[in-house]
Structures are given as structure tokens and as C-alpha cells.
Length: 411
Image (cartoon, rainbow, N blue to C red; front, side, top):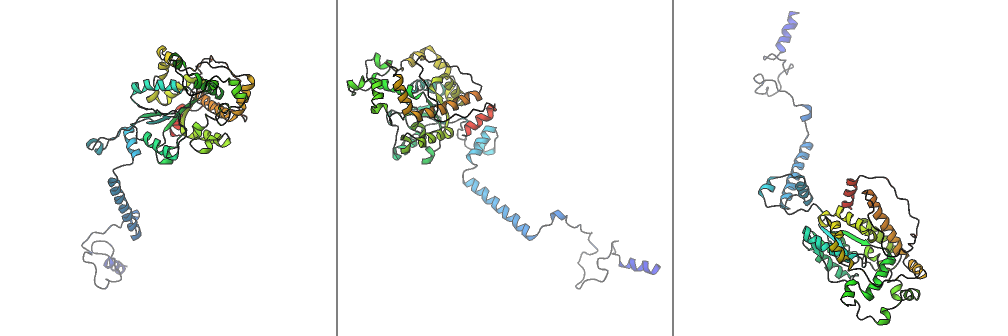
């Protein structure tokens, strides 16, 4: 028994531990610090890695370094990160010691009002002139009033001129919808106003012949080259006898302002109608109804306060009312019921679009809890035909206003 204990003691390391080579020292001798060094603790399992893992880490580090270099050579962070940083109020060393950042506008800085003729546009332009001085935005107008259809080169030139205007700007002109993104530009926010198609047609018919109160008081005639027999042509005769001014395609007027510059947008039909609806949904922040102008102004003030804040109080001001009344067309008469029904038939696509826009407008008002503040118009009320197709019932389900406003701005 004692002999066996002596053999075990001989196999133990002098330092007190077990001999690492109980069967003899390897060829070449033991390592130099054997016996003089403390016992080494092996690496933890999660710190062990292979050569492949090491290569992957080095490749990741290389990509990170190259990305950082490219980031600095490209002028810094993406624009949306700078906008977000300024919005959140964060600061960096570059913000405090570098050049001042460019002005970031926390609202749509490019607005286009491609106003439809005889839909209250002169009243709105008068308001915009007052608002631009009050709020300091750039109101860009055009002296061209009778060219709504443009060639490709004309579209490019106009878009270039609009895009280079000082921001924030609001551009307004009688022109059919322009697709800025097609020519590489930033798509602006569109707004517009339409009215009952027959009412718009009658206003334009008599305005071309007799102007408004401003023209009457100054003894001015808008169309001096018009022959007398044409100027005093009875509206019923024009409609019943199918004169060009009272038939298509002249009656197909509102839809092209929303359809666009495509040649098919000028042809009355389903294609132009559906494209106009699509553009209203995707590119227009608001399309209002002239018959409910006060509600239109309220919504514009809600959606674009940096442009339209206080617009309703200006509109209701007695002095502005006097100016607005000067733009009312004079000598208007009402066609016979027979002539009206013919007009409704010829303008059936215009009416389907009008009903669609009116439904969307009322939906916006309901979502914002806005009650109608409009007064019954003084003009005679015409029979309004129903849309070509049965309207779907509107869901009255309430939606969070702030979330809905976010969706509107993203659109």
C-alpha cells in the first residue's frame, strides 16, 4: 500500500499539480517554463473562433471603413437624416462648428394651383395676393391665360421655370395637370376648385360676351372681335342647334385639368375620366367645390396653414366682399329645361367627375368633423343628374385625424 502511494507522489508535478506527461517527457524536452509558470486558464468557449470567422470580421471592418470614407466624400449624411435631425433638435459637432445647415421647411414648399376657368379662381387669386404679403411666400403667377395644352418642350420649359422659383412658392395658372416627375422634377402639391359643370359653362358663355361688373362699369368688352350676332346668340338656340360652343369637345372642359397633357385627355370618354380620378387621388392635396367655398378655405387653412392661415377672415371682410362681387358674370340667363337636359347628356362625364370629387370633398369634411357653413346660393338651382354608375355607400367609420393628416401629406 505504501509502495503504491509513493508511485503516485512521484508522478505529481513539483508544483503540486499532476504531471502533464506521466508517460515521459516528449522528444526535444519540455517547454522552458514548465514548472516555473502558473497553470494557464483555457479560453472561454464563446471567444474561440476559426480563421474563417477572423476573415469575415476583417472584411466587415474594411466595408465599414470604405463606407465611412464614401460618406465623407459625398458631403455627409443623406438629406432626410439632416431634416430629421433638425426636426428632433439633435446637434452634432459639425452642426456647432461647421457651416450653417440649409433651410429646411417643415411644410410643403412647392404648391401648384392649376386653376379651372370660371370656378372662382379670380376670387382665390385675390386672396392669395393678400396672403402672400402677410405670410411671406412667393406667389408665382402667369400672364398666359388661354393656353392650357402644352407641347413636350413647353411642358419642360414651364416645369423648369416653376421648379427654380424661390421656395416656398405657390404657382397658379390656367393649365392642365403637369407631371413634374416625368421630366425629373420634384412633384409639387396640387390644389384646385371645381363647380357644377352646367353652372360653369353658363358663366363662361356669358362672361365671354359681356364680362363681369368690372367690364360693365368700364365699358369694356372681353372679346372685341366677336360679331354682334354671335355675342347676342340666344343660349337655347346655341344648345338646341348644336353650335360648336355648346357641344363637345368644347363642353369637355373640367376633366382635362386633372387628366393631364396626354392627347386622349381631350377626348370625352372613360379613359380621360379614370385618369383624372387617379390624379386627384395621387397628386392633389385638395379639390374643393365652389358651391362650398367657405369650407374649401377652412380645409386649405387646415392643410396648408403657412399659405392660408387667416384666409376665411379675409374672405369675410366687407372690403374684400366688394372686390369679390366685382368678378360676378353679368347678364346670365337660365336655359330652358329641354336645353338643360341636352347639356346634362353631353356633359355626363363631366358630371360623373364632379360627383366623384364632391363625394371625396364631403368625406374630408366628415373626417375632420366639419359642418357645412355654406349659404344657399342665390342663383337658380338646376336639376343635378345622378352619376352614371350607382354610388357606393360611404363608410362613416371615424378615423384618427392626426393619422389621416399624415397620410394626406405622404400622398
